[in-house]
Image 1 (cartoon, rainbow, N blue to C red):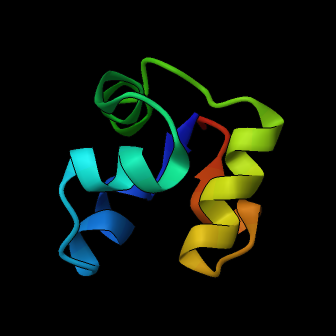
Image 2: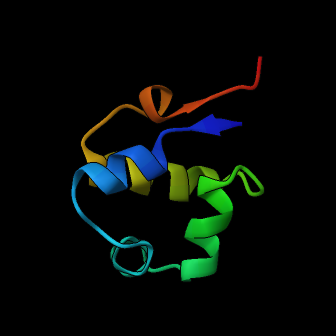
Length: 64
């Protein structure tokens, strides 16, 4: 699954560690999401969308 997490995080000037703390996950989880190695659970995807003020569909998209 493709995502815009890195782009949205960078636009806010947050480090991966800061984003992880805001989402209550490990930095390794943020890295794995950003690199596409891990697709977040639905509750985590909703938390990410809420944190960035975007719809889930605006952040996550299936691979084409």
